[in-house]
Structure formats: C-alpha cells, structure tokens
Length: 335
Image (cartoon, rainbow, N blue to C red; front, side):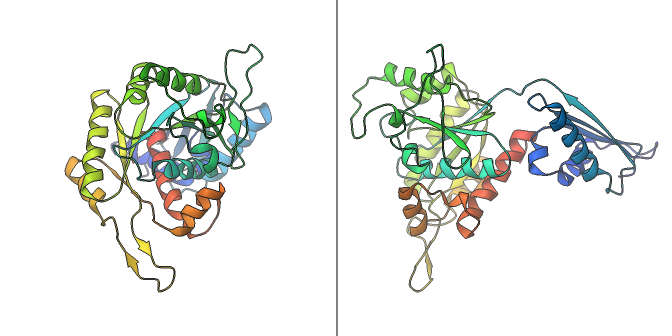
C-alpha cells in the first residue's frame, strides 16, 4: 500500500491498516484514517480530553503509526465535538436464554477495552442487573434539579440503572403497559455522566417495553441472544422481525449456553443442541457474533455479582471476543 500516483486509492484498506496499529482505547476515538503519498492522515475525537490528554493522544497515535512500512509522516486532526451516546438493545424472543448475564459480561468486556459503558435494565418486571453488577441495595440519587436519576457506579467500571434499584426488594410490580414504557424512558434519560455507550437489557418477547423504546428511544443497533434449540430460535426470529420493522440494524446473533463441560470428567455435552444459532444466522444472512458457554462457574459468579468477563481467565474469553466484534461495529459499522 505505497500509494504511488498511478495506483488507485484503497480507502477501506488504508483505514483498516491504521486501525490495526492502534490500541482499542484509541480506536474508538478514530473518525477516519487515510494514507496518501506515505502520509497518514488521522481524524480523532477528543472533545472530552484536557490539553494534556489531547497531547498524549497525538503522541500515542504517532508512535503507533510511524513504524508502519507504508508511513513516513503522521498528521492528526483532533475534533472537539462530543460524541453522541449510542444505544444498543440486547434482546431475545424467549426468556431463560441468559440474555441478562450476557449483557452484563458484554458491558464489562467493553469497559475493559476502554469504552465508557452503562447498562439499562429494561426488564421492568424481573430486574437482574443489580445482582449481576453487585449494586443491590443501592438507591440512585437525583440530579440537583431533581428531574433525573443519576446512574449508579458498579465495581466493574460500568454504570447501571434498574427498577431493582428503585423498588423495594421482592416487591411485585403490577403495572400496565404505558407505565413500563415511562419507566424505561426514565432510566434512559437519566444522568449517565461521561458514558458514551448504553446497553439495554430488554425483557424477552416483543411487548410494550420494546415498542416504547422503538418509539421514543430508537437504538443504534440490536444484539439478539438465543440458545441453539428450535423453540428459542423461532422466538428469536420474531424479535429480529420487530427490530427490522422498526428500522434498527441487527448487529448479530449470539449463541448462549453452548456446550457444557462436566466438572468431573471434562466431557462436553450439548443439552440445548449445538450450532443452531450459527446456522440460523447464516440462513438469514445475519452476522454470527459468537458463543457463550454453559458453565457452573458462570452461574455461581452471576449469583455473587462477579462477572466472569471482569477476570482474565478462560471464563472471560468468549465475552471479550464478542465485545471486540461489537466494538468494530460501533467504530466502522462493520464486523
């Protein structure tokens, strides 16, 4: 990619080369990158950085790109415009597929990649995020004006808000549809601080919460979660149709509870089947994002409020791989 005068430019390949050389923390700031006549020209967002932070960003970009054989010079333009907060829905057509656990671990993995992430617990009737992110018993405060809730900081670098933080523990909510829509809006419109990405852990199905969100807070994209068996896939297809009809891009499908390794003999079995989601994604021409394991450790960790993605072992790897794909989609619109 020497870009001689008589060689056609390859903008996508040029940007891909630049992104491959930059760290994840810098990549999500990158707005464009080109290489022309051995000069790398980079535009990056720095509206939230101090003068010293901007200087450090420029130094880091230059240090990463100058060693490239295709680059002799680096020019950097830093924009001051703040990025719009992105909203990603995590949905499923059926309950019990591990969607909330996936949302939690995906958020934690994204935070480890340098993203400023928040989780909205959209399951108004059955909130799980306070336990999963170890924020049970914490009540959200309000802004000085008293018109917004302030998101709660979890121990894992992820902010979170849930009806489970507001309603007394164990209390059943007997609300009609319009009230659930208002509750979701209250959570989304809260004070999320410097967070630039919100994952919405939706309830299963295609009901009032989903319709209210599509109407008032249209997501930038959706991740669908399913176990491999046919019944769950049928319901996942319905959820996908809802997002498609609402004009929300489906980023991809995740196969959850894939494979169970016996803790005694190590043999792997597939109580929910295997590979069904990947085949389903291929048939519908939807990207396949990866698999989440079915392990006793994941269940125990969830009950303790210790997401496996926060660690560095094998339990974190599947969530990290999915987070990297989602990060690429957020940065480039492609996987």
